[in-house]
Length: 278
Image 1 (cartoon, rainbow, N blue to C red):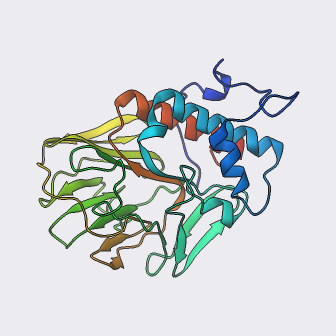
Image 2: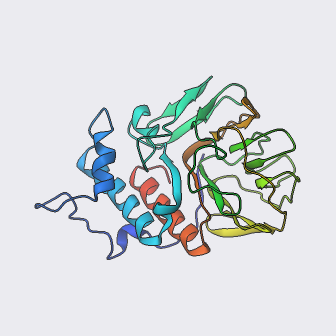
């Protein structure tokens, strides 16, 4: 499952990221320290540095404040891969048959396996809102898979928020807080970092590796009244359309700008390169 990625500069080489964090008396960011404390197995110093740099990148771009959930499933162990980095809430709960691989992520069986977040956009009161929202995943698999990679919807035709990376006809399907089906731009590679975002009532876009695949003007109608799930789609409490991609990270929250999407791509890439997953 090799992934070919754009040669964008790694944030680990940026002056904003100190290779001395955690050494010689220097401290990690408070958010990183809180996350370390929620791991049942303490991370190594090398892992702490990768996590700290990933959080620093998100804070520097402004994306951190806009996320409701962010999960780095390419973790040292399953418990760490299930933690929501933003807060001790909406942690992942594996359901059905979904396999964890250390430093790589979770892979569903295409039938029963998915990761439950417990986050319902209609009731959670988070950053994810009707006209400002996003979904993100990092896939380590390039294949035509009909199953949804992340999503929730009230019914099959209302309050839809979802992302399908590469269908059997080489299209990427994206919807956010809408009833209409919307558009499906061409996409021939389902590996890498994907983000779909709604920036206004009539403005959406989908990105792969921080490059736009397409836009849409589908008007927003309502938030999903169902929990967002990863590697599947929750329709009013019933989860279907699971997929078989190996997913390394995922997230959701308010709208991310182009600059934030690029920064998040770079930061995910740096972390995944650090653990040998990219």
